[in-house]
Length: 286
Image (tube, rainbow, N blue to C red; front, side, top):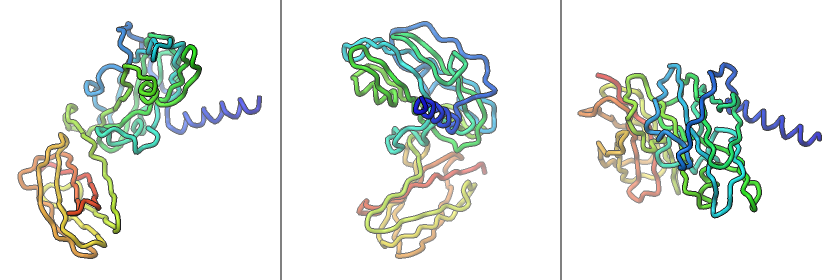
């Protein structure tokens, strides 16, 4: 009995930590009519954007599987919506893992945990306000599923669907944008990253955001020729130049030129491609 109580309290603590309890919850959402196609809807690209410091409200609809790999589904329980684990399994289109801070959810029963039968539908009501960085936030949808003849399985919904060969996609994202940015802008994996083999490589951009030009400072222990590229939010390359970097600190100007205001990804890669670093660059209005 003590062990069960301990597990329950631990689970509640985890849910509280990831911010899924919404004490100011709005009226629960209404499950949709079944369509026969398991998964989440609407398509995440059709969701309203979460604009920073602006109240947000949206509904995600869920349709449960009826069977997997020839075995009937008994039920599926939504345990939590939190981060992807491990974080390095994020999809390419995602910038960050988990819901942005300040955005909470509840299901149609008024709580963050709910259970649905085979082919049954449900819904999740999202609400709140955030000031997190702009980008796509991939949701880790953690469930427990009971399959007749096979037993109980817990994990991320999409991984379980793939494990059992189910024809359903449970990958899902929330879009956070700056005020004034178009909601249909697409962020294609513009996470800031850094990796090196056989040497250290660091960089900074200041000021950032900037309107006309900014100074890029790069430190490397491996003097070599590097390629600098700049990509827009659609993944299109808009700038390309070669740089000869010496050992230690290197500084150069990044000019706005013909570029429009927006968010870009600056990549700096060594000629041997064994060192690379990515930085988010924001160009403001003139």
